[in-house]
Image (cartoon, rainbow, N blue to C red; front, side, top):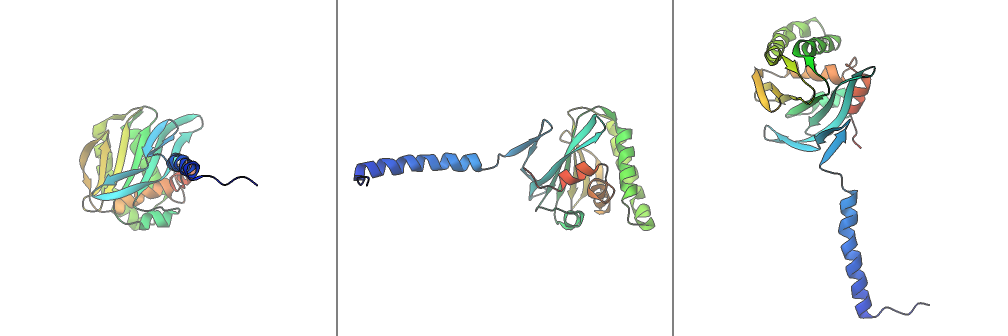
Length: 205
């Protein structure tokens, strides 16, 4: 049988254990950001007065060519298309470009993605003007380059905001119909990229 610890040894042992606990807890806590494909995404951010969390990240690629990595920010976690679309409040789709591409090609890809995930003829009519506005705004950008950050934000009070490298471009696209169509092109039944869709719906590592 081991002899009982005297009072001074007990105090010293408790002090050592107490010093170790914060370090262990810190090691288990997730970092404030996530690195994916060499690109950094904050796990939390503020938008339009709301607190958003990173829901998922994914890579858009064709064969060996990597186009961009994307991060989806929502007010609460969502694992399905329906859950994402029904989540209230502001949203952000952040794209970090991995190559140079004319803005016209970026718009063309978006139009195809939206068309593949439309709900019907009425939706196409409703989205015609917003898509033209998006094309005009991106056309003024001219070209997106490797390293550019494009934020496609939904501010419920203003509409869809197009922010390139921290600068708001063009006027807000009023309403939420365009943003819903935009999200469907990424996470709908016929997305740009199945792996990208899976990544954006999470969960995160």
